[in-house]
Amino acid sequence: MKTLEVHKDVKEAVSKHGKKKELLLPILQELVEKRSYLTEDIIRDVAIEMDMSPNEVYSVASFYAFINVKPTGKFVVRVCHTISCDLAGKEEIIKALEKELRIKVGNTTDDRLFTLSTTPCIGMCDQGPAMLVNDDVYTRLDSKKAVEIIRDYKRKAE
Amino acid sequence: MAQVMERKRLLSPDYKLGEALEKALSLSPSKIIEAVKDSNLKGRGGAGFPTGLKWDLAAKAEGTTKYVICNADEGEPGTFKDRVLLLEHTDKLLEGMIIAGHAIGSANGIIYLRAEYRWMLKDLKAKIEQYKNKNWLGKNILKKGFDFDVEIRLNAGAYVCGEETALIESLEGKRGEPRNKPPYPVEKGYLQCPTIVNNVETFCYIPFIITEGPEEFKKYGTERSTGTKLFSVSGDCNNPGVYELDLGTKVKDLLELVDAKNTKAVQIGGAGGVTIGEKDFDKPIAFEGYPPGGSIIVFDKSRNMRHVLMNFMEFFVEESCGQCTPCREGTMRILEAVEKLEKGEHVSEEYLEKLVELAEVMAVSAKCGLGQTAANPFIYIYKNFKEDL
Image 1 (cartoon, each protein chain N blue to C red):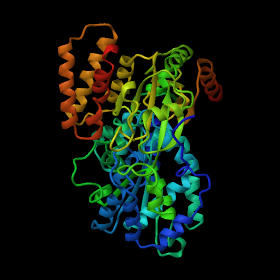
Image 2 (tube, chains in turn orange, red):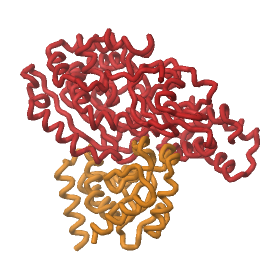
Image 3 (cartoon, rainbow over the protein chains, first blue to last red):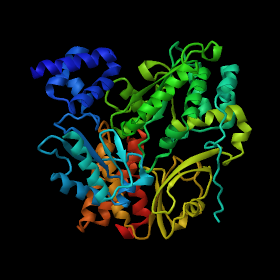
Image 4 (tube, rainbow over the protein chains, first blue to last red):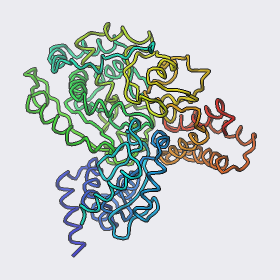
C-alpha cells in the first residue's frame, strides 16, 4: 500500500514538471516537501520515471543540503551557525533547542516531528541569531523565543 | 558626523516604474549594450566582470535560444543586500532582466533563488504575475514586438551554486559542480545555449543607467570602480544593515557610519575575502582595493580571531563541492590545524608555514573561486592576527 502511494506521488511530481532531466531538482524538491525525505523507493521510482539510473538521481539528491535523503522530521529546524549569527549568540539558541527537543544537533525526535540541524549563512546576518523552520525564517532570537517557536509548531501538529 | 555619504541612487525611493522599460524597448539592442559598457558597470556579485562586455559577447554568440539568468543565490557569509533588493526593489530587478533580454536577444529569464529565501517565493511569483497582466512580461511586450518571460527556480542548499557554471549545472538538474572554462556561459551556458548570469544587484542598476545615462552613474565611485554599491554590514556595530556607498569608500569611514566601536578586525568580501586590522582601515573598498562583493563583518576587541578562523574554515569544509582535490583536502587540513589550536594543542610554526604553502597551491590550482579563496581566512588571520592563534 505504502509503495503504491509513493509511486503515485512520484508520478504526479514528474508529470507536473515534465520528464526533462533539467527538471529533476524541482521534482525532488516537491517530493521532499510532500514526504519530508527521499527514501530508496522514491529515488528508484524517480529514476524509472525519468529514465535515469538510481545512482544518478541519488548523486544529485545527496549533493544538496535541502534534499533530505535520511529520515527527517516533519519540521526541519536549521539554526544559522555562520560567523555573524555566531557573534550574535547562536550557541545559546542551539543549546536551548537541544534541551527542548531532547536531541543533539543532527538528530530527529522519536515522534518524527522535528529534526534539529545547523546551516550556513541564511542571509539574516543583520538580525541574528536566526533560524529556519522548514521555509519560514525567524530572526533576533533568544533562547526563550526560539523555544516558544518550537512549541508553537508542536501545538500546530497536534 | 560621518564623513562618508550614504547614497540613494539604487535605493532611491522615487523610482519611476516602467520608465526605463519603455525607453529601453525603443532603443536598439546595441544602443543598450553601448550604454551599459559606457557606464563601466562591473558585476556586483563580487567577481567584477564588466557587464556590458558580458552582454555584448552573449548578443554576438550564435544561437536562437539564449538565456538571461539572475543569480539570486546569495550565500556569501555576511551578505544580505540581495534579500533587500528582492523584497523591496523587485521592479528594478525585473525591468533590468527584461532590458537584458532585449539587449542580448533572449526571450527566457530565470531567477535562481536560494532555498534559504524560499519564504520570498510567493511574493516574487505574485510580482511576476502582475507583470504578465500588465504585458510587461509575455508576448509582444508594450507592443514593441519583443517576447520575454521570467520563471523562478530554486537552489536546494549549496553555496557553490553561486558560482555561475555550478549554478547552470544545478539548473540542468545535476550536482552543482563548477565546469571547466572555457567555454564560458556567454557561448555555451544553460542547455549549451548562450547565457548571461548576473547578480541581482547588477540587474537593479540597469534601469538607472538607461534613464539617467552612463555619465550620471559614473559620477559616483572611482575611475576603475564606477557607481555606488550596496554593502551588507553585520557583526559588532550599533547599526548593522544595508548601505549604499560609493565604491572606493574607506573602511574607517564605513565603520564610523555604522557606529562600530573598539574595532579589532573587519572581514571584507565574505568568507573568502580579506581580514584586516586597524593599520589597514584607511584603505578603500573597490575593485582596485579590498574586494567589493559587499559583505562587511565587524569584530570588536573582545573577539578572538582564531575562533573566527575556525568558523570560516568549517564553512568551507561544509561547502566545498569535493570535485577537485586542492579545495576538498586543503580546507580540511587547515581546519584540522585550527581545531588543534582551539583545543590548546601545539601546532609547530613549521607546520603552519607548510599550510601557508598549501594555501598558495589552493589559490592557483583549485577549479573555481570557492577553492581559490577558501584559504584566505587562514592566510589573512595568520598574517594579521598571529597573536590570536
